[in-house]
Length: 390
Image 1 (cartoon, rainbow, N blue to C red):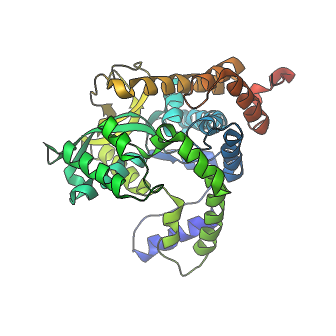
Image 2: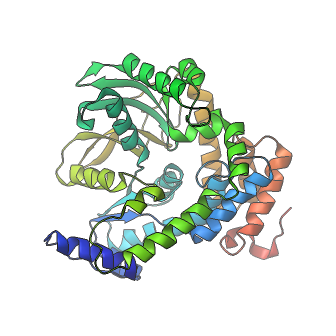
């Protein structure tokens, strides 16, 4: 905090901004009287992330911090902590908006919606990056582009693209397919044949489903997980941040990921403060927007954002091509939340059984045992009354 906070203060001074930045590790001090709370926490740090990524690899499943068993482990650790923060907000800043970046963002946001009274909107940088990608295909400013976007966090598709209100979906899809076709083997996120079959643009994280075996092989050959890479990048970044002469973001930061997070957050908060009633793609309670999912589910869809928060725009029924995958992952998310809140092992096992990347009951059971043991210090709710792993 001292190093990153020091850089932030220098950046503020260099721009002559009147912003006062206060650093604190006391939650009460940070939350009391707040209007907006932005959360981006990692329970267990990067060390635990690496464990989350390595356990699935032992079972022939991709190791990823938000998707599959890795995301399951992260959610179990994170949900109780986020609910504790939300409970403090209910007392100290009941009118505040919680802008949740903490991953897995949609799952964490649903836990907060169902088990707290905090006003919460889940946010991810993936939708805004997709807008910028599409704008790049078209050679136009991102502000001119709007997306017919649907799904869950890290499980979303773009069904339609509009430029100044005109449908240009076919043009964009053709450009994406051609880009994939021209890319060298192994350097394209998705095969051109897949994009043609989908007739939609899938988000980055869908490669873990559509190209699972190829990604798994890449991860095995890499020699280190993404979490281990991040540890090395962050070590270098902190050394740079400590330089008292640094007053801007170093180029190295681009390797860390998370591009446009700040843009998405500031734009969202500005829309609420200014009651702009403008469209943002965020994670919020479904309220019937996606007809194939429960009212209380959290979905990632275009919303009208103003002083009242995020009101989801109607999506309707999901295309058959993607409906089953979304419903399976949503079932997994609901059961994961129940398990994290109650410490119920049966719910935890059911969650993994429901996840499309887990191939069998036997693998699900072995995964759960490994995950609980590796997270014993963070998951007391699963070890009460001297309970043992099956």
